[in-house]
Length: 255
Image (tube, rainbow, N blue to C red; front, side, top):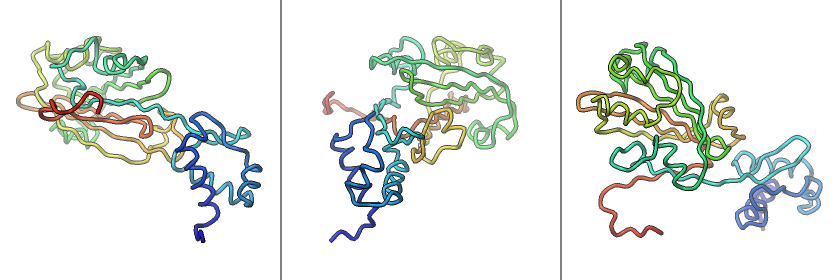
């Protein structure tokens, strides 16, 4: 005998059907009245079951349009190659990664001088409130919001690398630009975390309820000090990261 509450039985059955392709990405679920009849359940029970699926990020609800299965075309980012000058690039790392898999990149920029937030200042080894340059990107894969990227550069870098403070893209990528100015990033330290989005993050990334964000913080170092701190915020349901470490000769390309 199934002792699960009825609304969880509704959610479990629909989740299985989403997983096995009965309801494909982008398709609409049956109406609430149809689900009531199918499960011999009240409207509130059906709604509670659907709310579980919304909270898990599996379906989205639209006023008057019912419930739709979310599309999940995942983009895979090779984090060990991202911004690595030893690998060939035809522009900045984001454009290269997206175009290399046959998809279309698009991004908008904002550049400003502002006091470094406390957490960023600690990573850049400057006092909190010290002036920094923020280069903020809102990035898309095809026409779907993919990530936001906030890169902070310490103020002392600007005299040596003035293009960092100019609006708009740096075509060759900031890492290559800094290297051309004699400021080479020779290492980086990555931190990865997840949490639920802030209202602003949910708005920028067009995320529904129940979808977390993936936070990737990369602090880049020259030979003697940190030169930038980049915080990338990804939609957790549309992105996957991987790293390549050591000799991978035994790994098939199709693994």
